[in-house]
Amino acid sequence: MKIWRQKLSIIQLQLLTWIAVLLLIFFSLLPMDGWLKSVIYTVVNATSYAIIIYGNILFLYPVFYQKGRFVAYGISVALFLILIGMLKGYAGILLYRHVLLINIPPVNLPDLLSYVPGGVLIYVLSLVFRFALAYFTLKQQTEEILLQKSQAELNLLKSQVQPHFLFNALNSIYYRVYKVDAPSAGLIERLSDIMRYFVDESPKDAVPVSTEVAFIENYMELERIRIRHGASIHFEKSYNPELRIPPMLLMTFVENIFKHGIDKSQRLNRVTISLVQQNDFLLFKTSNRKIDPPSQDQTGGFGIINLTKRLRLLYGDKFELAIDHEGELFNAFLKIPLS
Image 1 (cartoon, rainbow, N blue to C red):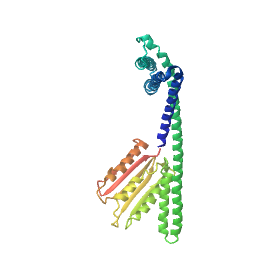
Image 2: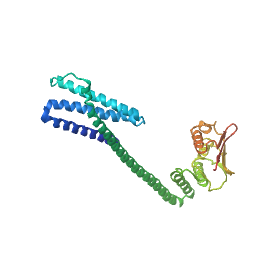
Image 3: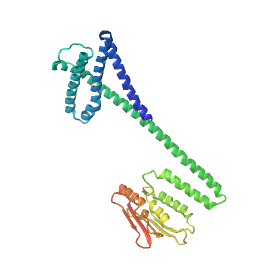
Image 4: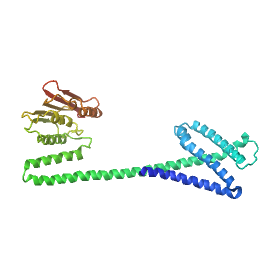
């Protein structure tokens, strides 16, 4: 709505300008020529002015000049001014002859060409008008950008205040629960850490591997709650904890394990995860029993497809991604470069 109002203000400015031009022409001629002749002269001249101005700024200027076709622009302007000048003279002569009933000699080419020079000044004014419109448009766009920037900053402040308020609330709940149920308090702490990871770490380009692993472990501990008989998870880790990788890069595989590789009614749910640094590469492997036939999300659904696209953007063809679901186990393997 605000943008519409700003555009409308430019239109209003043009309307006010044209009203002022019409009144100025009319009242300057009225004492000498009378109202009817003044009206005709005002209409003919104002119409020719409008055609020259808007013909230039809406068609000739963008089609030729802005595209670097300067010679074509110059020729087009010259022909355009000649044509409009001759039409202006011819229209005025016809109106004088048939409305005012003034006997005017037959029209010839030199007489019509005499109206052309007047259009040159209007053409120059059209350029001024074009630059004025560009200035007002740029000014409004700048104001709009500043407004959007201020709104974005306000939204950012809100987005920062609300999660941290929630973190503080979770901490208060944690201390209350810890006195009566320490394990449950630990889960609240893990949930707080997960949310803090989403807010503070996930927007970054890279995070320490140790931070990513802590996030994965917190996620797995919360998922264990939903498994009736628990799960046996072996997580092998061997890497420099200061190594940095893009956030949420390993989560797709872990998520798929708990979505499709855990039978909540069975006692035996074994999961093997391995994250090992090997020379200049980081190797990530997961293995779990197949509870159901592999779903599309496991073998090539949106999660894996989106991960593959992201890996290509990050590493080009320098990564390896393999999924094996032919036997009793569902195995996933990812190898990414560290430099």
